[in-house]
Length: 88
Image 1 (cartoon, rainbow, N blue to C red):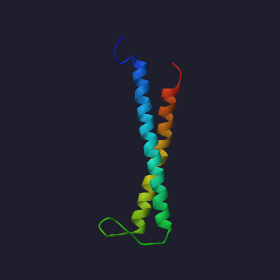
Image 2: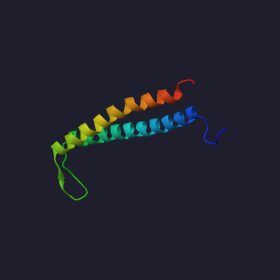
Image 3: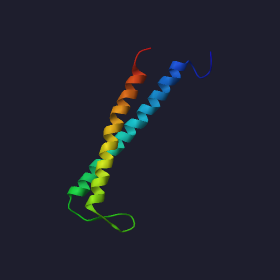
Image 4: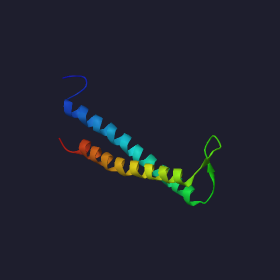
């Protein structure tokens, strides 16, 4: 028997890692979308780290980006999670 284990066990380990990483991306993107949404609807003027004003168009772009990443990563993470939990 090899040290790494059978092929199926390595596949499950890989699926588990992929699932965790995708869930982290989905959660981080959802939190980013919430933060950008709150900033967008606050009505305040926001600046970046260089002191340049961030326009509403840029904020909308960021909001859509974070939302799309969260929407894409969550089902992928769910799929990979189901893959590593299915019975042998």
